[in-house]
Image (tube, rainbow, N blue to C red):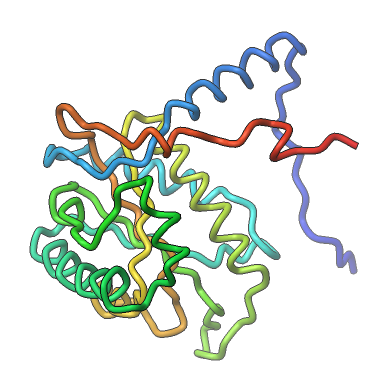
Length: 225
């Protein structure tokens, strides 16, 4: 009996080095134009684009290929309003209730963030990204998941890049605590909300903080040994 896993040929396109360099430079330029947006238009976005971007996120590598994520897409105005109310309540405690240390607030100051989150209601799409602490077998027993935070982080990066490539703006938002999102999205307790991704078109005249576009140079983020 052959116990080896089923295999298939790899679909891989070898490209000339010049083309590789051009494609890498083009993608760098595209992603360099990405900015976190907090001022959204209320214009609807094509759901086919959202679905394709989530499918792209689902192609991310994960520990043991267990794909420990769930993407809850919220477009209902009432749900968005409720989410904003709950998130702003938590954010008020963060900014004004002593929950955040001074150093953290100082780090956020150049970005101009505060407890007011109108974008949660204005933006057409909110995607709550859940990390599955474990899977569930057909008999209801838990299935251990491996490298969950790493896997979900990679999938989130895929999602943000796919949405930007399609022409949509995003904002990663992390109200803390976020446990209320399980009930809002009807997700089980073994799933942990990790990021709330706000998606849509920038509002007319949208401006972003200068500090947000200041990224570390290559020599500060990489070493070649």
